Picture (cartoon, rainbow, N blue to C red):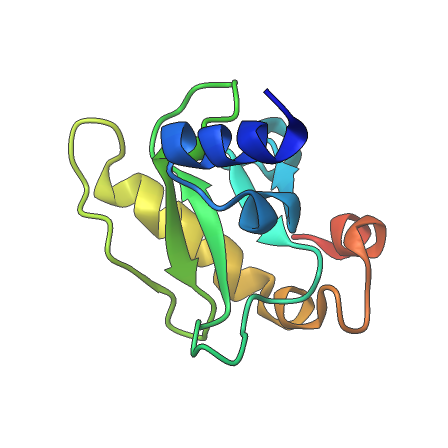
Length: 126
């Protein structure tokens, strides 16, 4: 199997575009204080010409191990939204914690990749 075939196999089995995954930086739960891992777009908030809204991705389980197959977006705004419905893995309280994280870090999330890098983001993160 060559490199290109390996990438295609990964995308089929992991249901995520490898380019999207490579553009994200993992912030583990012990770094953010959240009960789950999140991913931020170091290349700038994901807002391309296809109409994707600025967002972070969060893991819908509380595993310490990053799980690319359980990522769900939360859109970055003063009123963050997600299509995830609280259930067995995450409660409404957990979702509210992620929303609070986005609101507290709104300015730097919007600057990430455009005006600041991930190191500066982590220094300013609340």
